[in-house]
Length: 283
Length: 298
Image (tube, rainbow over all chains, first blue to last red; front, side, top):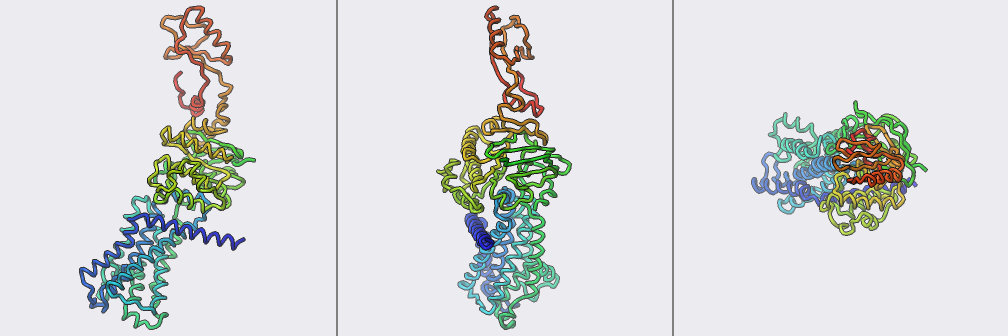
């Protein structure tokens, strides 16, 4: 009986992923910003600067930016999309309707995260495939296990933060601005848009390093850096434990605060007085 | 069998007492309307029964569950059509029915649902292409996709034009014909009269009257009014009252006799009775009186 229930829940999660995916691919603006936008950066950077060797790092521009844009696409797919979409479905009353069905809350949230993670994987795969095909980006099998774990932890971390920021967003109108205003400055100082190398100021490095984007980008890029991969030896040595720990800390903090502040109740178009304190009690 | 039992329900939002001691009972298979003006506490009451809101005080039993603590098993047996929501507009009508249907252990076939709510032609259309009335009908379909024992309809036709309301009423009539218990809120008297077996009037967080639409507020026993005007200069008949606009009125419990006496008097004196009307107080009159609004001038 319990097994039967668990199997049904897995089916429900699968159904939720499919349904979230359907909606994602039918929202051209989201698909554009998640996949085409980072791809455009990759193409523009290599066009403007040429796919030359970066002296400071000893690798080509493509070898640097393909994984950097893979991370940026993955973060757009999770953090940006989850923030915006969750705020919208909340304010449209869709979350409230779901809350009134027998679907357990965790299945809805799991479906949303898994769908975002799937889109993130597609975005990353597109960047890397274009990198390999157009810019001669090299892939190192020995780094694959570490890259997989880094990607998974990064995607979970930014999904949790997306849910948290959505929960803190006063209205869905403000959600895109809030998502971009938090992500883009961080991307500029985290080695996503600008090459992060030894000449980077120590203070900037320390500040950016406390947030999860720089660790995500660094750990992921290093798996494509021939010098770094060689220096780290076997597959076990490829894991960036410090960076993983920072992302995991943000994941745990983000998830627990999101659970605390998440509401199913619209914040707009609701005509009755409803203090926020009340809405929170309902979680 | 009783579907809903509510005793002494109260709900406070900060300093605002939205619901102040509501008692309700809704029988299984009954269509029950909670009628009241905006801000009377209708939606708050219904959302407590749905499990969306926690109550401040009182006892609530819905299908034998306490909605505040009930889980999946409870929500599998109720259907909710909220007041102001939308459906994912990128989905088609059939996809939305499929997605929401998959959440329930028991479900009604999609084909039957689109027929029931009159969306057969729109079944494969994206929801964003639907009109407001069509979307609301889709929401009605989603409310019963899980074949619920009890359906909550929160102001199902607010903001509709008259023809869309007629259509929605037809759909709700179809639902009630399935034998479902329905608890609806509305601020339209005619909606309550048209759809409900029983009506409770709620005002300022309290139930002020309850009964069948025809009997509400002692309407069945209420006295009938005979009203008419006279040509200028005519002497008024004995035992009539006159209102400010010059209309004469006879309030009577025996319409046949009063009318006979009145017309006999008029014919005997050669007087014409202008705009002669016989009327029982409408549900609207009763309602306005109950909620303390000035009734229409006679």
